[in-house]
Image (tube, rainbow, N blue to C red; front, side, top):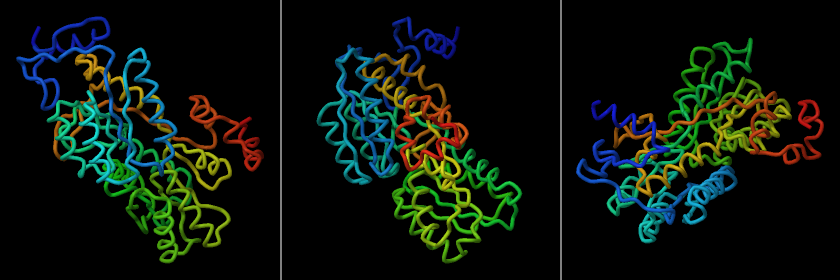
Length: 373
């Protein structure tokens, strides 16, 4: 059996075997050579977590608590999570990496504010012997692995759903506004490209904006520009890359006098978006199962911190390229289109949102119509 086959076989048996990985050679980017084996640690590992902002509800509501819970479970309560949020400040996040290095974390999970500006900090962490896992956004630099959703599928799903919502109005005379995400987020580029590929043959993209920092107020301002140029009643639909910006788009359209919204997309299945979907102010969102993404990142961080490299590798069998590094180990999580028809089967079933959270008195009638009781 050759080395590649032997490594694959060992990965398949990672859950029951403790073996040396030195024969596999160069298992982590910039890490172990063929002559060195990883140092094994117990459950007393220290994991750093850096999240990018609080504008998007998911980070504080789902990602942070799920990762913390999973690390505790994987280490029998002995592992430590060191956490910081950068509040959309790339410079602050770089300083937070320095703090993680000073605190001697064993592994660091980073959701980068700016994928490019974090590069030097990733290198500093690696030079300090810290394993770095890019989370949700592919940071540049020598990361050991990337955990995220299938970004192409997200944009493709949004584009397809928007065309489907337009129905007979999906013609080249239909004017669409694209409200894309932050230009510093590599995910936003993938969302935009995939969505544009779905839309281009069916409709006319009349205006397209890259929205600084994903901020709803910036999306609202961009949408007001589009309305001034096109006219609110002439906008057939809006591609919004996430739910927060969709809220800004809705505000702008209502401010322009529209009472019935054109189809508007979103992403993240945030509570206000789900409520807008129920009332018809937003057509759809993309549900991304955060618990699965968080659990995968936490397990990868713990296993690589413990030196259990084969188990780490078995969690990330795909490969992704960044502008600075090639063939980065990747764990890719799939997504689901969230519409009025499947709220109960998605976010409610998975415990992301409770019916009582969604169906407040203001939305009781819409919930009853959707069978959400």
